[in-house]
Length: 367
Ligand code: UD1
Image (cartoon, rainbow, N blue to C red; front, side):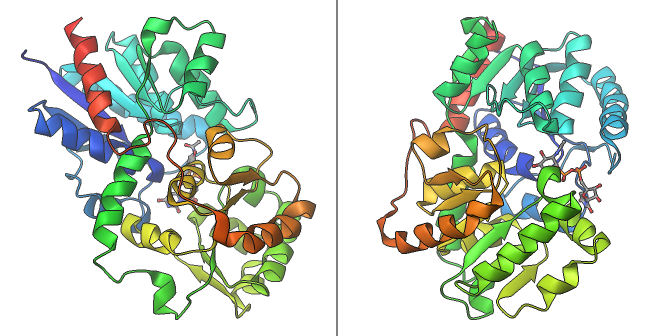
């Protein structure tokens, strides 16, 4: 079958590891793709390095939108992406995850009559104060092909009245990239913790507005992290948003002065996989990291009231810490039980999700 091109959209850091295996699988089958980077993330260590680490082709088109308020960023992406759609003939636009680039490109494509496939469809935190939850609900409600990572996603979509024939359970695409990276990091000594002679350590990542944009919460978080570091050294690769707000609240110095808290710049994918692959505990508010730690068998404490990835709790290593007063106890129990955790493999977290995604896209287009 001769097909028009498939547009693959990336914009923010967690998009790259989701699109890389899909692009590879399309090319393996001779399907032409156009890789479009919106520029939502633009620093070299938030964007460029992932193309290298994931063996990904450079973007065919860069929209260079940069940062801004939600409305500004979303609108800029829409304006620029519409021009791209006018210039090219797309059989389908493939979007991933729940970032502003995801919803912006979905709206543009749908209004031009181009079908959209949403990878990682159906996830719900049921917390509409999260910007990502709004992006998820809106993207799913208008996309044509909803590709879910776990069966709770199918159930959520059906509960919203979405017809079953738009929904396809394909598995977790992040795990395709994780398996691929694990194979490569084994043969390279790139763990940044080893470079500072740490054998036993915890990894912290935080970037959600609900944790890092509120001064009182930041103050509490910092005193907890200092306390935890007395028990186990902490490696903390810092998202630029987090560094900016901690600095604005005058709190960055407190962390920098702690001997057992090691602040790093954001890491590339391979360094990060290597870092978490050998750690004893993850403390995070990231969605992807809840999944990666489940797959690696590393205890994960998620500093949120909810998660759109409940399978990481029911079938994984994740535990929600919805109240910081419970954090020390949760750390103690995770470190006491550290021997008992084994890697988990929920259904279709098997490294072959890209194949199922491309199968679904092709059969949708043939229909
Ligand atoms: C975005 C996503 C979030 C995802 C996260 C992963 C939305 C609504 N949020 O949040 O779901 O988990 O990416 O990182 O799409 N900045 C830089 N350099 C960069 C990018 C950002 O310095 O390359 C700084 C800027 O100050 C910017 C801020 O980070 O204003 C926030 O960036 P933005 O893309 O708006 O949201 P994230 O917090 O990264």
